[in-house]
Length: 168
Image (cartoon, rainbow, N blue to C red; front, side, top):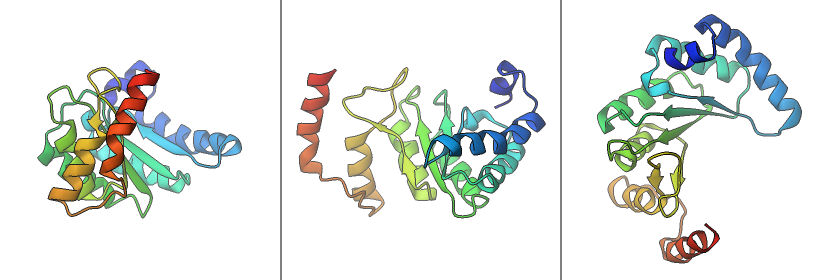
């Protein structure tokens, strides 16, 4: 978003200039490179429609679209991811929802519906700030409302929850 660009003291043009250089540098150290569009939900759509193809051209493996302050609603999420999916040229979009307004699960489900290939989830509510979408809710919601099997065995979730509780 322009807010985060201002904090980094970068213009939109500078962000787009640096993007391929940073992806190339990351590629020298890592096999898989994900580009994060922090605060994308509040970003100018015209900028995002340039940023996403620039990340694709730079050969990013995945592009994370973040609702950093949890301000989206499900319809806005569906529209945003759908629009960005249209310029992602086959590169996987990742959605990162925050739960500030209690809509992380619904927003995550709408991102899946719109074509996000990856979503960020939590176990036992452990996540950044107010948390992200809970794994169990997303998996069950995707299966029951979107007819989307995420490949997660729901019977294993209680054991996973106990393990995370013990470790944390």
